[in-house]
Amino acid sequence: MLSIAMIAHNEEENIRDALASVTWADEIVVVDAFSTDRTPEICRQYTDKVFSLEWAGFAEQKNKAVSMTTHKWVFFLDADERVTKELRREIQEIVRNKFSKDGYFVPRKNYFAGRWIKHGGWWPDYTIRLFRRDKGSFEMREVHESIKITGHTGYLKHPVEHYTYKDSNDYLRRMETYSTLAARELFKQGKRANVLDITLRPGAAFFRMFFLQLGICDGIYGIRLAYLYSLYTYEKYKKLLKMR
Image (tube, rainbow, N blue to C red):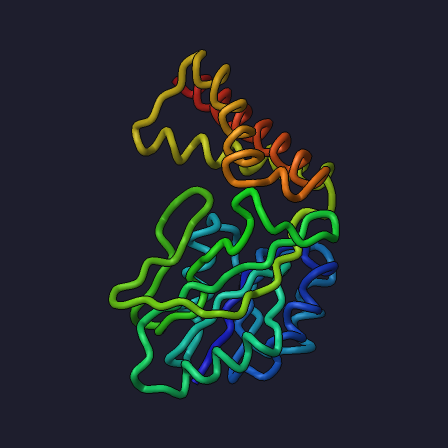
């Protein structure tokens, strides 16, 4: 009835807990991009459907994982996420109900530096994760790809737990890759940058996240995240400007 689809690359620190949270599913499919750590070994302790494929980009890699599943319903799980018992029961009820919709938005409970971030656009952070296999696929984007549903969608109540950046240094390390991919995506869409983008957009990003989205309510964590996101915005538009 239900398949879990995942992609991975050097996720030995995270993936065991992710897999352990979905052992109740009928099938687990993992597409690994030739990890050099113990990721494949750990995955094979939970499923015999572990496939090694060259990295093809986030969206394409995720679509490959979905295409290798065999059940009617798919739940896509990242290696740094966990399905709670409450979410499990909700998923199982939907899968059993023949009148269920074609796809479902799931709230994500995002953790930063070990703390649940409740504001700044980080909660409830709805994203489609549960869908009928023949009704959903990831849109082809460089980054921030999401699942597009052909049909009707609904919302789940219980969140998936997302253990994102461990600290500010972890954010900064990954920012280099994500800002490059985001700039490429903007360029592909015909967007171009100028000096005003680099000058004004980072501050606007901080203001929106910290004040308008109430990141201020998360205290020092809200300040750190708003500042980090303003840096990401600066890097993204600086790279987009160079592409011109």
